[in-house]
Image (cartoon, rainbow, N blue to C red; front, side, top):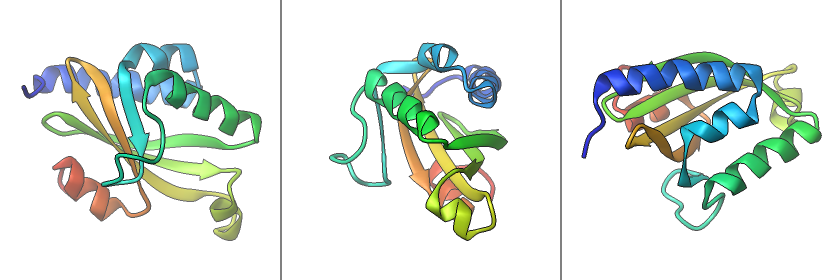
Length: 131
């Protein structure tokens, strides 16, 4: 069942605020209990529930990684999230920040799936939003 676009738009604002503030408790409320996170088209790697997703965020923060939100675009039942990530090897190689994108699939008003992309065009196409 597709999610109402108003719900996705409302969720977009909440996702942006939670990620910008690096508030894991706020982000937890946005994730479905069975939320998954990983590379595109790879159901095995990555995280397989909300607690694993949050643990990954916490470990990354503890290791010095940070991100700032550059855009959040609502699709029909997806969100395209643009990030500038610091504290990674790729960020150092690119002068301090690396651009990354996530496609968040929304189910029942919560984030059910997160997939990471290196290129915006690929992420936008996957999210079904205008490149």
